[in-house]
Length: 242
Length: 300
Image 1 (tube, rainbow over the protein chains, first blue to last red):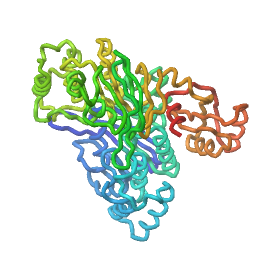
Image 2 (spheres, rainbow over the protein chains, first blue to last red):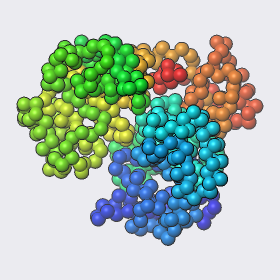
Image 3 (tube, chains in turn green, purple):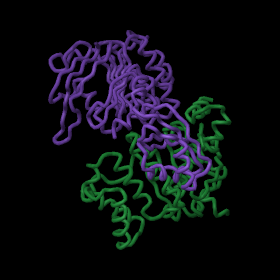
Image 4 (tube, chains in turn red, cyan):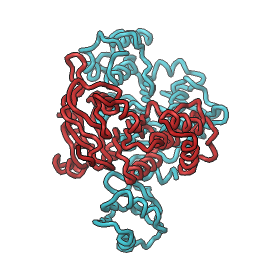
């Protein structure tokens, strides 16, 4: 396999009965790339993502994630990736420090490493004053930034972000994207879904799923040229409306 | 005036959810409350729909006082909460029939008002609400909020988490309802939806930052904004953040929106600086402020 490609997907399909939730999708993602995975609600994004992170078995096709086959080596994939979603990210009833220790432990980091990572992370995020406070008491924007950092604790090759910025205020949303750029700059591949079309423009490349298929895949610039529009929002509307 | 809010404050223990909020909504107006999670939008909705009593201030909705005439308000408003609140175990048709009955009306009597929306979910009318997709739930919730022909419609984040296509459809529906004379107060965290309202209030941390038409709000932006682009976004943002004359630096799609703290700013100087940071293909050009720029400037 090409070592620069950290995700390779070919004809990946997931059937629920007669219904093809994901219908033979094919794409690659390169190391350090910010890859936007877009689509309308119900287009099959979540189902596709679940297969890529090793928690749902594909019906057919091929997929290699972080060097591992999704059919044979799903457990190894889980160890090599980070995951963050808007719905579930951190435990509200644990403090900032406890959450970091907990997830560090889950990812199998040594106590020493957890302690060190924890210090760095709290300092970077400026959370010194709230390190011993319950995560539930923090503003949403802080939680999301902390949650992203936690998903990177074990230095994964790829981080999957499922609508990470929903409802977050515009300043924090941008700070969040600056963190994404930083991670990508350091070589982490970022796979992200979003409903904010301005965020789609932040991605190196974007795929758009419609009814289980990838109907478009290119850089935001080329997609806009291809559909002869000025904004990604219009690309999305044109495609998803058919 | 359809809604009059005067100096409303509401606290939960130490948290000041609403601080001295005042605004009016005209009859037939589509008024937007624009702000992130935790701004106080839902608390305000709950005060205005008589589900919560404010600590201070007064408010009237459709001419009725939220404290003394709350029953009349409940007859005259429709409320679609942010969280899906219909009966999951009832079918689409049963939910709608239930809400019609509670308000002493029938589906037939006001069918005209919901027809456009209901026809889209009618093929699934025997399906339980709990088994519907997000977009269908949203349409059903809107039908239930409209079935008693309210004068004022309250919609709390109806488009959160909804994809751009469904969001556009939803706003088209709101415009049609507005044409039927219904006053609409809608909240959203999506700044691009602000432009679709007649007037908006920008809200953050329980305070209103500004109220005006979307066009007027962007004109109030105090600086000239520039679109800046270069070959490496990450290094561009870092370099601009390090530039000592910056006033604001925010990524906006394929550009960074930059404003300078100096009055006599010369873009060529910035270009030279960015070149010294090894950036290539640098483009700097004037652009218009957006609602989001204004919001961030006010929220700073």
